[in-house]
Image (cartoon, rainbow, N blue to C red; front, top):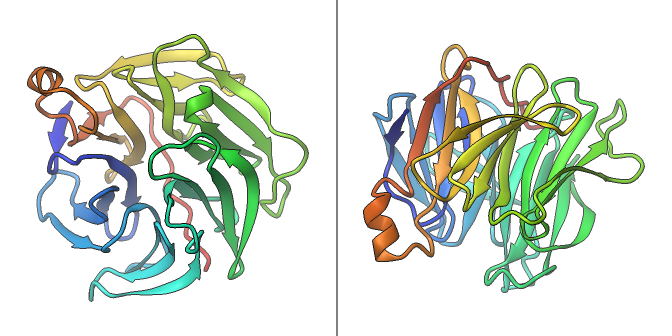
Length: 285
């Protein structure tokens, strides 16, 4: 286990770009996008001028990036971006949060209040140039990921301490009702970002719990990796063999005493895993 990158206030949205063999991630309140290689070298960053939180890869040169006001096409080479569509742009009290590309190439993205006001956000899906609202009354959207067979979407509302599963049809559209997949009710930590491995197990970063937990397809907990920071925010598989786990973390809200005890809070944790992940799906914009 090692750390890379700077200490972010709220690190989020790790994305391993399979064509570039690079890791991208965000510091949400800074509106900053970072990139580096698997060893943490050749690092650079870009500022969006507003909170930014999640991305997907379009091709070798472009990302789709979610910011507080919209979804954008970001060119890695030039550092320029163009707006694809607004995302609650008329609501200055919300921002984007967790998101990931679905099995059909659509972008699933959640929003939340800047001050975490309960149920002020929603879940959306960007597909074929249009944004569709999927879920209302969301407080802290998280754990957005998909089973390897493309038949299940996973979503969470951190404040409710639940991760849901949602069946998908052959076109990647959700069908039926969401069902509770994982419940952390009664715990003093919360489900944050998640990713599925190649065996179909879900890895969940648990905010306030100093841990990364693996869950079987039936929702039972399989194993736990203890972490040296209390606020892990999101995991992503990457590396040449897809056996590295990158976990973003946060310093936000930690006391001076806590920061002394966890000086690497806000950096990205890199863990060599015994299980591999799958490359992120290419975004279709």
